[in-house]
Image (cartoon, helix red, strand yellow):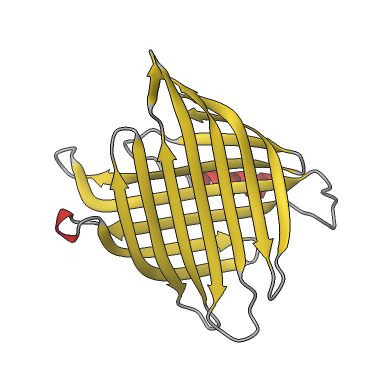
Length: 215
């Protein structure tokens, strides 16, 4: 099982002309290995094109894992969007989500804005399958210079899934990271917060330390 999950993580890490950050998070309940990047494709002249790739591979390991319960959970997500300057950061996006539970194709709209030390993007997408969920995904990263090669590292990620069919349960996920960045390394404290349920949300918190490196 572990060999399969690690192989799947590598398969979803597409090599393009960009730095690829990999993170290990040691929480009080679970540990995660996460590779996530958002980069434009390059054109034939080596310049950024209007086509943008979002890529994620994530494995979650529960400390209470047994052969039958709390097994490793894998998430592989790829999205391709078209973001011409004329649309002011907006553009259509197609998303493929693969987890232990199956594959979920999604379509929707995306918004992107970034500078040297700030990046924000988000999308509103809907599954193309029967009994779909409507997803609102937001990601923001801020890395202002402190001094020399040292920068603040602040990141927030939130995903809200709302069922578009009767009987479904909404689920909310927030991921917070706060620390320091030096060259390709980032380290600090983190919080993963998961909420799920209909009527009354069941909340699970996972707090700990993260270490990231940009390969």
